[in-house]
Length: 502
Image 1 (cartoon, helix red, strand yellow):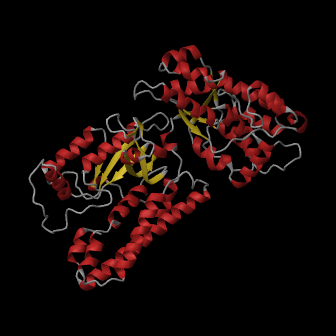
Image 2: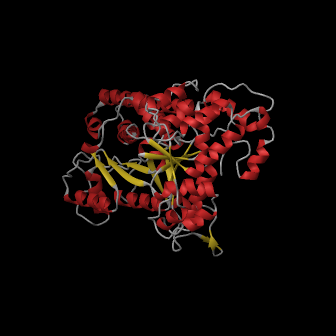
Image 3: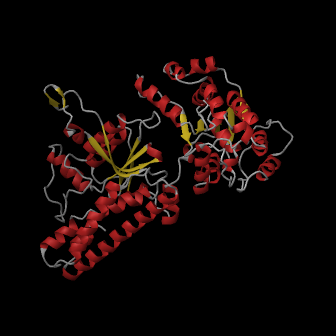
């Protein structure tokens, strides 16, 4: 829908336009519903925030429902269609369908107030939250698992010029030739486009995702790559100079089919992984565990963790649905400390099949066995189809902790103090070599982020890139060895019953 549609609509045409907009809004809601249904299948519905976007779209639907029943001849009906935000919501949804790892639609982000602007009560910061409400930016699409913030603006060149004139920067007629601009769209606040971008940047600078600031992308579907107005071109140049990626009408990709888009929108951030993956001991155990390779019958000697993992595997198969897609065809490495710890656990409590898998995982890379043979042997030990491009065996690497720490930012000293020796070897090695580390040890990953942020002295310090598995797997083990093993795990620094190495 364009403003031209609205301008040309008369009596019957207005009615037809109202029904057309109603249909298109209903299609948007149905497509959003399919996306949410897919998220529920993946058990990711709580990770993706769409409440604000969906609520706005539902409100728009109610408004259009009323307009289809209104008298098309009265000015109020035409004005209602003219001021509709359907174009904005359509643009946001079309943009989202081109994105990967979408975790939010219409999500607010905040930045702390300055001392000059912070509200106070009796000389103390105001706890009412009124200042916090002022210090926020609305991000239309949060993608790349939080590292990309997209703002979609349906603003026109005429509206930008009008805002500049209002601020006294340029001369402009108050009315456009069609009499329709300026109109306040949902995303076009009175302070203008530049102010919106500045707010997004403030919120981004106050936000760290895996120790990184989100990147800002501005989508302008109603402005060309070469604006007609010099003033508009200058504004876009200023925005780009702030580090914002600007995409104008002819630079916006065409959305794929809904089925393809939904898969991509709900996908993990695998395309951002390093070419070589660093495998934590927790993932080595998941690769080896009987729990990850098919149905395991519950036994009375199974501890609560194993019983729960049996249930989880029945609901969502970890290797086919998460770990193998995360690995793809990438080369895998693990530190010698991680390999030794995994082998110790397997030798102590592992079943015969768990021992066989562990051996295949860590075969010498110079082994005479071709990869096809290794994968075939692994296939004989699992109920699931093993990907033909899974890059076994995993290469074991030696790690010099003092040398690694000398090469990392000074904050590594404080990070390392909170890590056990094995976790130092795994996470510091991945950090120093810019490798994505695959782990299920969420407490350690979060702990490192907290320490780095608490001791940050600049915005350039990046912590390790850690991808967390949605769940963990311990070894099933054999009854005789498993009974009482949780006490041994705890004394040696393992997460009791979970097969985690720490």
